Image 1 (tube, one colour):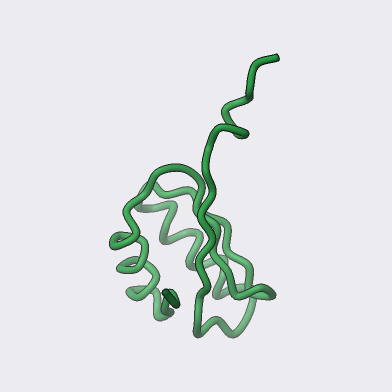
Image 2 (image 1 turned 30 degrees about the horizontal axis):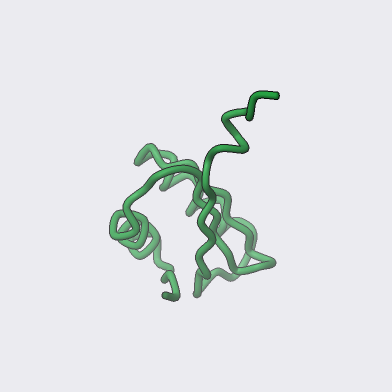
Length: 72
């Protein structure tokens, strides 16, 4: 049985500080999408999941520019 591409992609989870509502999470997702990075942000869990290869420095920069911080 072949693996699907979704199973072979690695997902990395980061903690995000400073989000106050679900709209904050949506804003982060949109800003990442504009940079070509697929991410899923959750206000309830204060987390950001990035699927596939990415540069942490770039993600941190985008999140910070949006007004939030990634806790490392």
